[in-house]
Structures are given as C-alpha cells and as structure tokens.
Length: 499
Image (cartoon, rainbow, N blue to C red; front, side, top):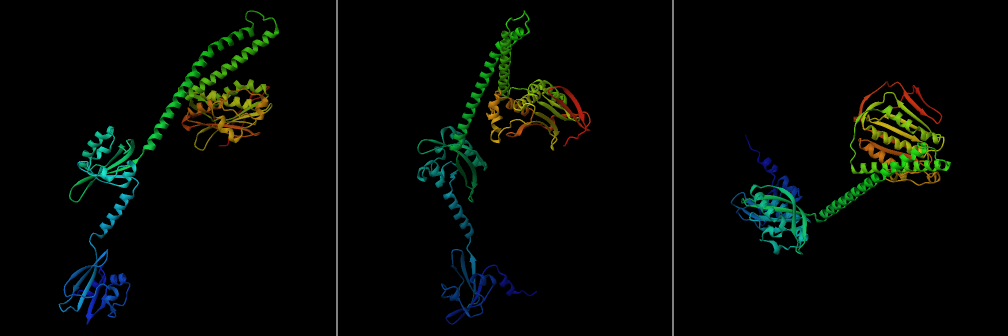
C-alpha cells in the first residue's frame, strides 16, 4: 500500500512550511492548511519569501534547531538534506503554555478575591494569604507567613481548629464551619470557613481555607433573637396579667349578676319603687356586658398563648348553624333583621371542636347584626370549594369596611370608627373577629373578609377537606332556615347549590 505523504502533510495539526534556499534568499514553496491559516497567506508556491512571514529568521543552518518564536510557539527548523537547500519549519505550541495561563488566572483570582484565603502546610504554618485576608482582619503577609495559622484564631476555637487541621489534612477531608478570628485591633470576627486539602505533585499536602466574614449577620441574628425573646416575654406577661385580672374580676361580677337577678325576680318580695327595678336591670345588663368583655379577653389571651387544646368530635354542620341562628334570633329581632341560611342537604359531618366553631360563628353573625341597618337581611351560605374544602359565608348588607381597614379589623382591639358606627354608638372591644379567626386557624382553616363601604361585608370561613368525616342526607336541594322578627319557620326549596 502506497503512503500518501502529501495528504499526511496537509492534514497535520501543526503549522508546517517547506522552505528552499535559492542563493541568498529562502523561498516558501509549500505549506499545509494550518500554516496558511496561521500566516493568512495562500501563495506558498515559491513566490513568497521567508522574510515576508518570519522577518526574524535571516539564515538557516544545516542543523536542526529550536527558536522561541512567540510567547505561545516555538519554531522548529529541520533540514531535509545535508546540502542545506531544503527545510521544514514547524510551529509547536510551547509545553505547559496552557498550565501557565491557568496559573496566571488562578493567581489573579486569588489576589483579587474579597473572600479571605489562607494556605497552610501540614504543620499548620501559613504559606500564603491573599489581600482579602488582609482586608478582613488587618494582618499583613509579613505578620503571618511561616507562622502558626492558629495564632490568629480566637482562643475559644483554637484547640478545636488545631485538632481538626491535623485530622483533615491527613485524610484529605473537606469541611466547613464557623470560626472566630482575631483582628489586629484586638476585636473578634465571626466567619464562615471552608477547609479543603490539596495534594501537590511531590506528594506534599496543604490546606486551603476560604473565609467569609459573617460578623454583621451574627449580630443581626443575636439582635433578632433577643427582640423575639423580649416580645415573647412581654406577650406572656401581658397574657398572664390579663388572665389573672380577668379571673379576679369574674368572681365579683358573677356575684353582682346573681344578686341582681334575685332582685329582678323579687325572690324576697317586691322592691317597692319602680326606679329600683329599672336600676337593677341596668346593673344586671352592665355586669353581663362586662363579663362578656372579660371572656373575650380570656379567649384572646388563650389563643395568643397557644394554650387552647381542641376537643374534637363529630358535629353535623346543619345542626350547628341552626343552633347559632336560633341563639341569635332575639338579637336580630331587636333590629327587625332577618337571618336566612342556605344549606345544602348533603352537608357533611365535621370533626371539629364544636364549642370553638360555634363561638366563631356567633362572633361573626353578632358582628353582622351590630353593623346592619334596621329591617335588613343576613344570609348564610355553605358550599364546597374546588379543593373539596368546606366554605361558610356570612353576608350582610350593612355599613361595610374600607379596603385599607380590612387588615386592621382582624387585629386584636381593631375597630373602624366611621360615621355610621359613631352615629349608632355600637359597643364592642374589637376582639370578636380576631377570636373567630384564631379559633378557625386552630382547625387548619382560614377566615377572610371582603367588603365595600355602604355595600355590606362577606366573612368566609374555609375548613380543610380533612375535617370532613361524611356527608349526610341527599344532594337534591337546599334547606333554608329563615328567622324573621315575627316567626321562626323552616322551609325547603329545590334550588340546587352552585358548586
């Protein structure tokens, strides 16, 4: 098989040029594709002189030689015969050129990095630090080079780092953690360090430590932790004070309520003057109102302290809603307000704390009654959401709440004082909705409000699907419980609930 040397020459990865000496001139008679690309020349046919592409080469000997051509290439000159008339010139990339370039890049990164870097040997002596190390702690290279690295670590961490350095460098372990470093001014910096072992070509092991200053972050964490602890302590003190003072007030209040009821009922005979009866009723109603406020404060304190434990049982939701609406019917009758409930017959049995859910509904509907006009209507809707959660909506057409005040009314003691409420002189502590919200959230649910001034308010309770135990009844219609000031009657319609 005949070898095609011309094809091999042309395909060679190294730039090659064939030069022929003619008198005192050296002519380029041939070149491969790499050479033509490198020199950007096409006419290597004898018309191109060597000095046109390599002006530094003025004379070629009959011996092979290597000339440093550039920072990247060496020029190899190989005579083809002994008469010195034909030569092959090859450009060979310098050995380790890439390694030196990478070294230059790594050195630039090492020196310019804002992260502190220290290199230590197996004895723990510092071999090199970067400028970032100096910026962090103030130590100059002359202060630390060939000195124990551990001299610059705070005493409380020193023994641990000495032990870990020996262990890590022996095993080639990579690790990270927090270390306290000494500064030149005597202060201590908190840092996050990464320790990496490096094995050189000669087998020597060194350790590279990269250092990030986290002093400011640690101070912020400490401040936040202390502020949180102070807030929790203050909150516990507040809750404890409210609970204690409330319990102290409930005892005499119960006595006032009890004795005033005896006087109202005239158990030991008539009071005589009619004014006594009026004053006794005032005493009784005022004491009941004050007891209601105290109970709300106790409930709010218990929710904030997280001391309420759920007593869960299976509760039919229709029965629970009917109980609440019947309880509040006398209050709605005083303002000639009609309460209508739109309940699908297939509503489920829930596993909830019946007392808490009932109290949440009482608070929400009581609020709706308070802020609704005389002769208006309150609607209660229930349905399933797309996620199979259960939704209860209490809708009134009362005064409404401005959008920028919605978050405020959900905070303890948050009330919106608008013209409607000032005119009506409505009593309240601003705890009803926050208590209801807390009780619903204990069940994993949510309470949300949408409202427009003059258009009324919608309060929606959403209970998660895992609170549903089973459905009852059929899904053929909606059961309406209508409570108006004149009668309480139950009617059924065949309107299908919109899912």
